[in-house]
Amino acid sequence: MEIQFSSSFACSLLIILVFLGCYSEATAGRGGIGGGIATYWGQNIREGRLTAACATGKFKIVNIGFLSTFGNGQLPQVNLTRHCSPICNGCWNVSAGIVNCQNDGVKVMLSIGGPHGNYSLSSGAEALDLADYIWNNFLHGHSTSLRPFGYAPLDGVDFRIERGEFSPYYTLLARRLYDYGRQWGRKVYLTAAPGCCFPDNYLTKSLYTGLFDYVWIRFFNDRQCQYNSGDPSVFRRSWMQWIHSIPARKFYVGIPASEEAGDGYVTPAVLIRDVLPFVKRSASYGGVMLFDLSNDVQTNYSSSISGRV
Ligand SMILES: *[C@@H]1O[C@H](CO)[C@@H](O)[C@H](O)[C@H]1NC(C)=O
Ligand SMILES: *[C@@H]1O[C@H](CO)[C@@H](O)[C@H](O)[C@H]1NC(C)=O
Ligand SMILES: *[C@@H]1O[C@H](CO)[C@@H](O)[C@H](O)[C@H]1NC(C)=O
Ligand SMILES: *[C@@H]1O[C@H](CO)[C@@H](O)[C@H](O)[C@H]1NC(C)=O
Image 1: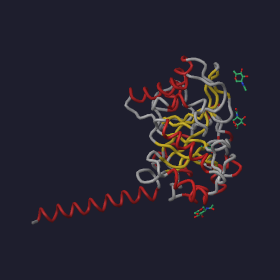
Image 2: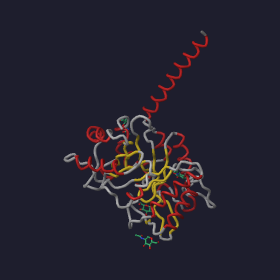
Image 3: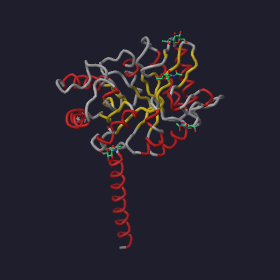
Image 4: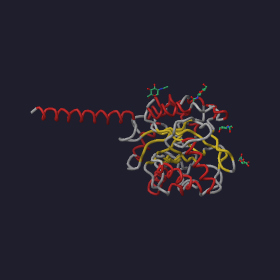
């Protein structure tokens, strides 16, 4: 009798705990049920500190952008605009933000490339060198000099390659980073931000490897595929083509977080009414990527769609 009582008590307790667990996951919008919001931090000081962004509980993934100088014999360098300067270790305290975000359950990625900067990969050797540099300076490796963002290991690397000549070596870079993770028993997340027109010149070949976890398709600055309420079929066709062609775990709809952030802005109301119901039918739908946080803090976009993603 006593045993029966305690086991059924334990059982109900378990059910309550599981329920609470699911409930808190769903309300925080962090995985499991439904989608999440990803964003970019680092390109404008008005967005505030990384810690504060993650503490809002609105984001599942934050990409720190950008590592925008590499290749061509250049020393790799991050550019976080006026947040800090990597010269003389000025960005060392980004470490605290990374740790705080991770403690809040937010994944933090290093985004390489970006819309500005001077980057390229012109040989296999250069790709392998960059992988070593990233592993040792931003992930779980060790560097002989001070790491730009301090000791905190990031969760992975985001490929935001959108400039320069096409290079086949990004595939090698992705594979090397993935292998480093395997070798040291650490998951290295790989994500990418291709333009919405399929195929994307810079990234499609790398994405075919199946090594990428999340792909945020940039549905902006390209009228051939960005959302257009006059003719939503263009957007829909592009989404379908991406998710059926590329073997990645999850796909996010990437949109500008304000009208100034890019051509292809959709209001939160239109996103909720017209875009989300369509993309959510795909099993590999992962959520929405807002570009970028500095625009989101102006428009409050993430708050307007939170709970609906
Ligand atoms: C960093 O990026 C910003 C914006 O893209 C650019 O204006 C600035 O010149 C860059 N800084 C350096 C040191 O390259
Ligand atoms: C790092 O510290 C400097 C100086 O205290 C501060 O101005 C800056 O905002 C900090 N950066 C971050 C990302 O916390
Ligand atoms: C990029 O860097 C290379 C090597 O330092 C230099 O030759 C080239 O002029 C730079 N390109 C731009 C657009 O700044
Ligand atoms: C942002 O939107 C949320 C929900 O719509 C609201 O609660 C919050 O006060 C807004 N914040 C600002 C700064 O407008």
